[in-house]
Length: 179
Image 1 (tube, rainbow, N blue to C red):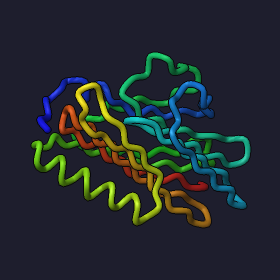
Image 2: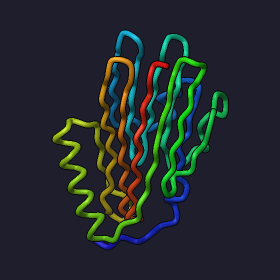
Image 3: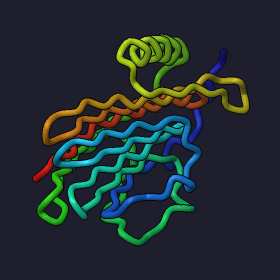
């Protein structure tokens, strides 16, 4: 397989909302919900992206990582963060939800991408994470993973989005907590 570097990875963004997002806006491949005494959590995975929703009482915070945002609402949008390089941010929303995230991206050679793809697919199977593979128009393998850990007052979520046509790996680490 030959991987052709593509500038489309520059369109990846992390969007943070102070509201829930509607599932019909996304091509959801898998979802997971967690009901805890202090909070509710829902995670969705789709080709090349994910959505996380964390709710405490009437306060809801949603994170979306996507390669596009044309169809997404502007209402409730707190922040947009381009997913290039390494970035970190933390925020408390309405004094009820703590949010911390980090984003890292890499562009890999063909061989390193394939090794990473296989390693991450094995990781997803071993940890029972949500994952989805698909082929792009050139027949290149792609992979999205969402791995979630539940704690009494917080959720830890790690995502990995591997885009073969660009040799692109996007990793996010997010913590939602009851503030």
